[in-house]
Length: 404
Image 1 (cartoon, rainbow, N blue to C red):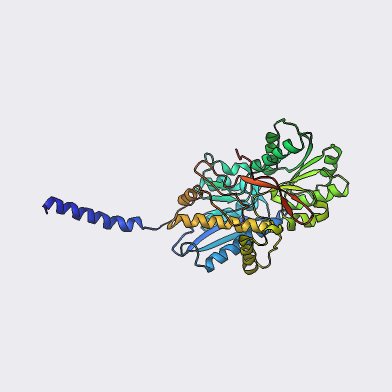
Image 2 (cartoon, rainbow, N blue to C red):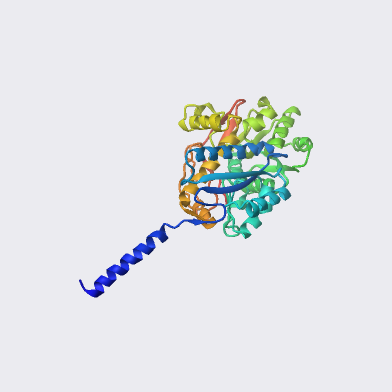
């Protein structure tokens, strides 16, 4: 063996010895360690949108199960979930506390369009992942302008286009009345419905908005009835959606009602409104509704019920929002598994933008999550369902609503 050859062998061996530990090196940003992944969120545990609070509780319960099973890659997931009352100034205060004082790795599933709008620029400026935002506003899928923000559920634009396609096909002469929340969420729904209809038959004859500080939407419902609308597009948070369903029934206005998915919960909306007054409502679903008996023998449903009874026994088994929280938490666990030992904020976003045909047990059959560096809309498919007085009954095919 020549001296040169022997030197090359030794050099290569030395390089491998150095590269080995370097390749296996763990990388952490604030909130991550060998034993913990600390994340934060804000939820409306009080205020006008408190019906959504169960989502945060369900997510906390899911991480409790994960931690009992050994965590994610051996690390405990700690979720710091703070009340913001659905008030943007309070959200800003709580998010700054989570980032600057509690040192969370990222923000997960903070709920509400106005509240998340108030923190989006701050989180992006500080390069803190604003991950799987719990609202369907279209703005959460803009990686060019906000590379640290990503949505989770179908966008309101995608959902509205599903309703528009249905009306064009099945009720082409419809006169549509719209109730929407006077913020980015409601305006997103309204704009997208108009874009989806595109002058192809159905006409919007009346638009009525409400503020989250309003006591009721009774006057808006009366005005919509007076417009002669025979289709009612109801885009509201649970409190006001229940009021609108009840009021329209009580005054004898019985239009075909399209209910936004954000208020599709039987437990949180239809029961308070009155199940008899909710018959015939149409919505668009992407998760298995827990009131639908067709899932009773489904293993994924049985697993969810077992999990609910063990980890969230105070939760309502008929509440769609508990399926939502369970599924969003599962998505995050998958992202954290993909991160491995590289728990930097940059890698969290990289893995969140690399989901390929991810199947979750409680998604409707055929619906999968897909993301990329240019596609921050994980779920884009939905299926229509009609309420029969007891449950949502799926009909038609799975529809892609197009989020762009």
